Amino acid sequence: MDPRVAAVLSLIETRPDIDVHALAVSANLSRSRLRHLFRTETSQPLCRHLKHRRLTHAALALRTTFLSIKQVSAATGFRDVHHFIREFRKTFGSPPGAYRRAAISDTK
Picture 1 (tube, rainbow, N blue to C red):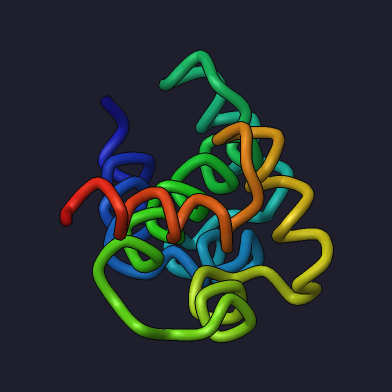
Picture 2: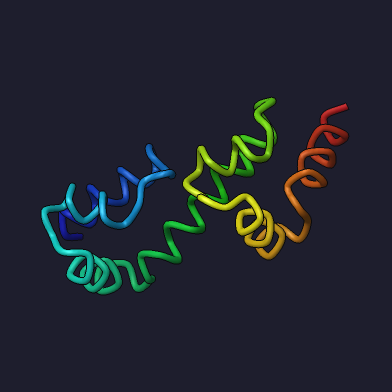
C-alpha cells in the first residue's frame, strides 16, 4: 500500500473529525489526487470511508460517553447535527438517541 494512503488511514482512525483538505495537506497531495490514489489503493472512495469511520466513532461515543448528540456529531466531524442524525439512522437503523437507549438497556 502507498505509504501516503496508509498515513491517511491512520490519521482517520485517530481524528475522525478531520476533513479531506487536511488529509490532503498531511499527505502532501491535492484533494483530487488523494481521492484518486485512495480509491486505487483501497477500492473505496475516500469520502465513503471517512463517513463510515466517523459514524463508527460516533456509535462508540454514544455507547461509552455522556456527550450530547450534538457534541458527538461535532466531535466526529459532522457540521450539521440533522445531517448526522440522518446518516446515523441510514447506517445503524435507528437515530442516535434510540441507539444510545438500546445500548444502555443492553448493559443492564
